[in-house]
Length: 277
Image (cartoon, rainbow, N blue to C red; front, side, top):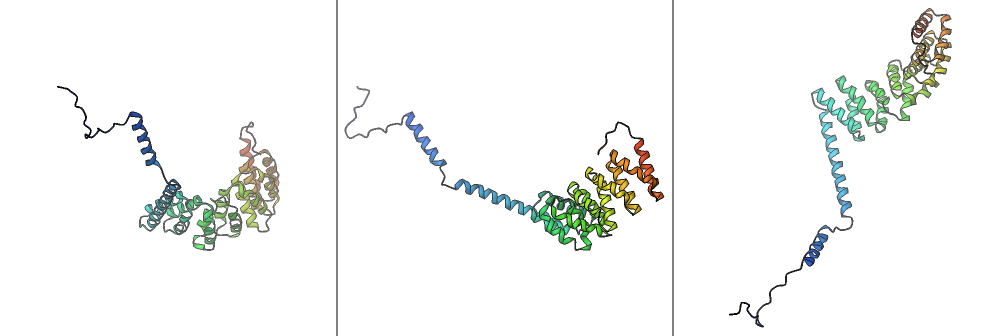
């Protein structure tokens, strides 16, 4: 008996099995089709992700704004800090409201937060300068923003008895950008403005102020002369030391006594200490 059956003409032929190469080609084609995308499909996905992120940030801002109404000052304070860290211009209005908060610790961090938002907050803060109730915090906030628009409003506050100290603090916070304007203010007709400018320059400690401050040692007002000497003491440097010695013959006894203490203090410093000017 034969072991292999003869295939008759009517019998169906068995299906041919694909070779290894054919199977590999088929799989490659399937994978290629699976990863094909219509033009612009990937871009649409990126834009969609951006929209989702924008929506998430908006939701987070809304959450923190709601927390500003919480009865617990600690919660409000943390919300203000978070809004400042986000630095979004949408945070300006709620932070402006926080400058009026009933708790000083919330108002304090609101000043910092406004500074973190930066230039987008300037217009709102300038409007708040008209409001006596919140002017102090608006001034201090402006001092934390490096924007040329803040200089004129802050300098004008030096004429205000009630808020000049806050303006000095804000200008010192600005630092070097405020120095040219403060040096110009040393020649202002308003005695209070001149004194405030001297105080600010002494605290900023910029070498450019040394010569103008030396000139202020001849001011007609004794307190301005005394303040100029203290400012030069703060800045340091041999030029300032030599200039201050002229006040040992000042007609005002208080000025003379103060200068004597300054010079005595300097004499105790090591001779090798480098001058800063």
